[in-house]
Image 1: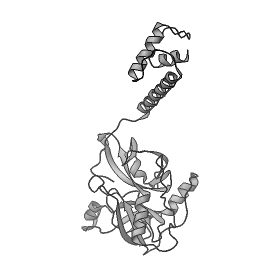
Image 2 (image 1 turned 90 degrees about the horizontal axis):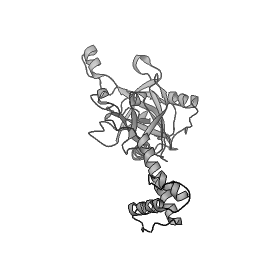
Image 3 (image 1 turned 180 degrees about the vertical axis):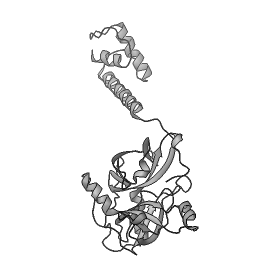
Image 4 (image 1 turned 90 degrees about the vertical axis):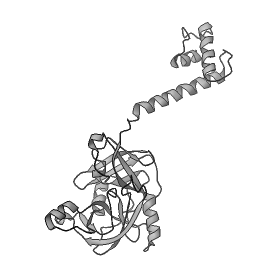
Amino acid sequence: RSIQELLTALGYETGKIDGVLGRLTIAAIKSFQKEADLEIIGKPTEDLLISLQTELRRLKLNASKVSTEPVKLPIVSSGTGFYIQKDTIVTNYHVVKNCEYLYTREGSKLTVNTEDKVNDIAILDTQILNENILSLSVNPTLGQVVYSGGFPYSRILDKFNFTLGNISSLFGPGSNISEFQFTAPIQPGNSGGAILNSKGGVVGITKSSADTDYFMTETKSVPQNINFGIKVEILKDILKENKIEYEAGDNFWWRSSEEKIAELSENASLLINCHAPTSQEKTGVR
């Protein structure tokens, strides 16, 4: 009877499910054995029952994947994120807004846990676990040496990029106290990346660069090394409000070498691809 039920669930005709080994049931067994490349004997056995269970489970799993997997829309922009827990990622809100769905370079889907549009921060969840996480330090100080890591121009450069600079101002545009200025070079695609101190602790999140067109219009000059980051204490407040855990402090006890900080930054960072209809496509990556 169990074999008849499984055969029926798989689409084979057994007639009445009555536990009787009739002609239709025998034919159904032989048909399954032939398609599954098994020995064709037409008799109910323990091995046959196991094979039927396995095939039914496989079909159900495949059906589930088909129903939940989204249609792959084009990559319209990209940004950077970094791990603060093995399954938790931080990036900018503007990296994830207007995206139908988000994927890593390796094809792993990301989901939005928390968004803060005002402060331009988003927290993402991932099923791809990473033991390389970044600790959250304290807000930067004026003149402090910092490092920025990310994936600029990912469609062209295709690799992680690591740069050096310093904190040039403790305020953002319009004297915004939640942001600061730094000189480490960044490009479109760096948004959402971690800004680290000399001990490998996060002091901020890369946000943007000064708008060249605006400065040319207003001042007739090209801005140089004017980049903006979000202070790490803003991120901490958002995480605390949403009861999301993080590691506080620095990754190294003492000032570390630039090579070690670069390795740490790369291992804890990932490229975030934004998938959306082509009508939303931008002129370049973020």
